[in-house]
Image (cartoon, rainbow, N blue to C red; front, side, top):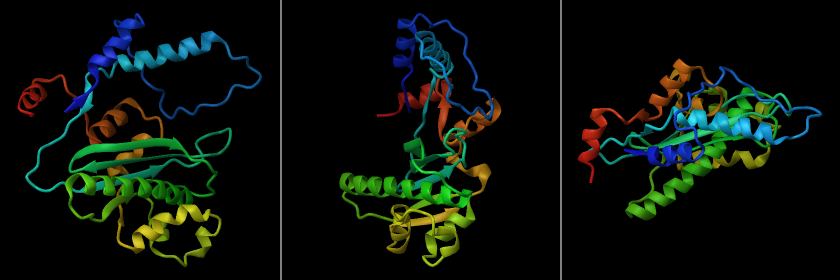
Length: 241
């Protein structure tokens, strides 16, 4: 298991907020730019306070890695919101990769161009995930000395999956910049396999939007982030070499 509770508590103590109350994120929160507003120190201060109050509620959270007798496989999940930013219409994409049942790499970032449809945005997010998959694939091969195996990436949009497998799907891909077609090449040469996953089992969903408390906890558990303060994890931690 892996967490940073000591570091988080140190930050809270230095900021004088070790005993503060936690603050939940508003469900479906969409941030907008302030118009004609001067940047003031109080705004930055309140932002930092909000971050620290969030940190207060996550000090015991960490990533658990489960032992397995089988050789762990590299598997990824890719997802994206569509036109979430009201200022520029850009979407937020996210992906997470697992080695066996433990998450080892994840990313959440705003895309750099505007997508017309959910199919486009999911296709572009898939390409970013494919880049990371190839890098992780090469890294694991170098560490273990084993030959590279294909990496499965799970996407919840069937139209975007069809784009990764059909190079003549012109109706929906004519506007997508050619640099995002990297995932097609990976699928064609067998480095990447793309499979459909239901929205309920899409582990990267938590990386694309603000979620309510119950949904956040559900998705957090799904991706492998758990509360490590319980006796069960203490006992497991004592047996880890």
